Length: 137
Image (cartoon, rainbow, N blue to C red; front, side):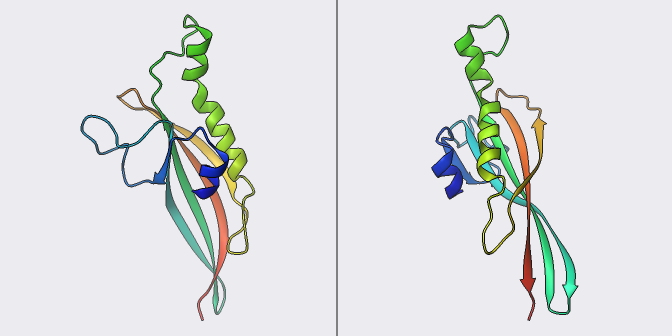
């Protein structure tokens, strides 16, 4: 989350995903655009007697709620604002791709999926994957 905060200044809210976009009454408790982060899956595989290999999938829900339309009839500034989420996802992907360290392998971007919603929020799911070793001894 620190890397996103430092290198993606257009994100106004970055947090662990606990359902902010799913469970609310009047308005979600976020500022837009936002990135909500969770671990969606961890797969384990035994390597040796004392070592397991873990493959972790990280889900980043990117959402925006522009108050403008992205139609070709709209002024250019409105279209740019409406489609800004695509530039934002591109930046997030570039910032996180190949980010790694001593504790885990470099992140690999896997997919981006659009979520259809009944409200005016535009939401996409970005999946990243990394691997790391776990010594069980």
